[in-house]
Length: 90
Image (cartoon, rainbow, N blue to C red; front, side):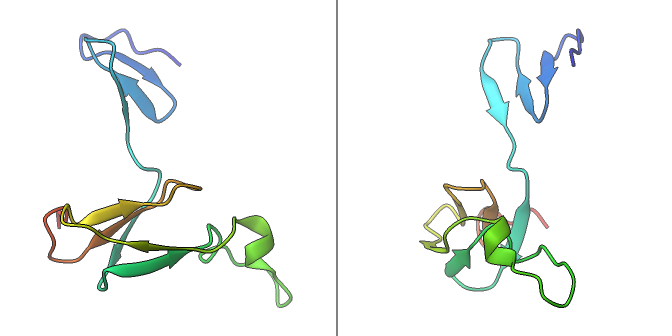
């Protein structure tokens, strides 16, 4: 999908600006209250009564939010933002 506007080209979620630099926005942002978080890529996926969310995601990883106020999961690119931290835009 192309957008020939002066701002640049659109390519899925990624936008390419006038300088040709790709700007990837995280697919999902989750506000959290603790600096240590875990992600399995499927904790929000629900199915029937016998669902197995881990089978739909990735191995569970434990991440720590740094001085920037956020951390990205290396598997699914979810961004965890610390409430009230420097990256909290709300």
